[in-house]
Image (cartoon, rainbow, N blue to C red; front, side, top):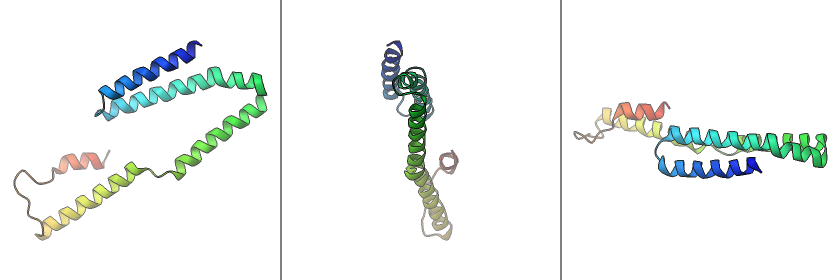
Length: 124
């Protein structure tokens, strides 16, 4: 009961932080890690012992292993769109630079690409 209450409270805190820190990727990543840790804690301390008591150790271990395998397969099969976006951004940036060097694109003062910022984005 206490762990269920802890889960609800931490979820509410996580939602509040996400709404406040929308643009801070580092804070959102830390919050997601904290939420995952709470869920693993609840599974380990509360749900798995309950399942062992109800079904026995063999079926519980098999079910947990199948769940882990299913998540791993989903991780491998589902495309990582953030990686595709970075590759596309890098491609576009290189194409723009090549066109600029060839004289096909004329940059105006203050409207060019800020290379250091783009490099930081591409190298994250």
